[in-house]
Image (tube, rainbow, N blue to C red; front, side):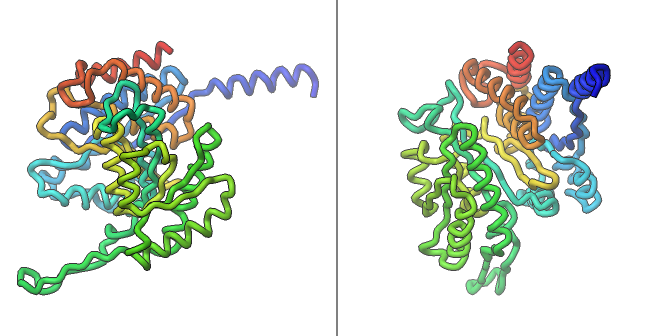
Length: 375
C-alpha cells in the first residue's frame, strides 16, 4: 500500500476511534425512593459518558405501584416485548405501601426475570474503604467476592400447591425444581467468571454451595454437574460448602471466597448475609443476567417509602448497579473509573445510613461525578 493510502487509512481509523459510542437503556425508576437513587445513577453515567465519549439514551417506563393502582396492570406481555429491544434495564425499586406485598414483586420483578430468561443473579460482595463491617478486624482486602445465584429455578419455579386449605389438615407443597441444562449453564457462567477474575489478579477459585447431605436428589444433580464441568476449566480451583457451613465461614473467614455458585433459594439467603458484611443494603447491588439477551441491574434494598422525597437516601447501591451495567455492556475501563469514584465517596461519608451520610442523596451523586470528571 502506498504511503498516501496508508495515511488515508490511518486517518480513517483515527476518526472511527473518535466516534461516540451509543447505548440505549430502559429505565424503571419504580416506587418510593427508586426514582431518587436512579436519578443519581444516571447523573454518574452521564459523567462517565462525558469523560469517555459515550452517549447514553435513557428511556423511562412507569412500571410500579402507582401504575398498578391506576390501571390494575403490573407488566404486560407487550411491555416485555418492548423491553427485549434493550440490552440493559436500569431498575430503581419495586414496592408500594398501598399495594399488597407480592403483587408487584411477582407481577413485575419475577415476570421480567423469567420472561427475559435472566438466569443468573450476580451479587458482588465488596467492602469499600471507610465502610463499617460487623466483622471484627476484617478489611477491604478480606471481603471481595461475588455470588452467582441461579435465578430461574428451585423453589421459585411455581411447582406445588395447596389442598384442604383452611382446615387443620391443610397441605402445602413448594417443589425445588431443576433440570440439567439450567444447572449446566449457571455453572459455565460461574467457571468463566472465576477465570476472568483470575486473569485480573484474583484467586480464580469457585465454591459450590448446596446441601447435598439432605437434598439428595437436587443437591446430587448440582454436585455431579459441578464435578463434570470443572474438567473443562482446569485453571480454576474448586471447593464445596454445605450452605449452613458457608454462612459460618462467610462470617469467620470471608477472605476464603472468590466466586460462589449456588441455587436460587440458597443464593437468596447468603447474598443478604453478604450484603451485611460489605456494609449493608445501602451499597449492595445486583444484576439479573441473560448473557445473550436483556439484563437488568438494580440496588438490592427496597423502595424505602418513609424516605421518599427527602433527598436523604443513600444512592451508592444504585450507582454500583450502574457500574455493573457498564461492565455488562463491555465498558470495563469506565466501570473501573466509576468504582474508584464510589471508593472515593465512601471515604467522605460519615455513614451509609439514610439521613446520616453527612451528604444528601444528590450531593453523593455530585461527589462521584466530580471525581470521575476530575481524575
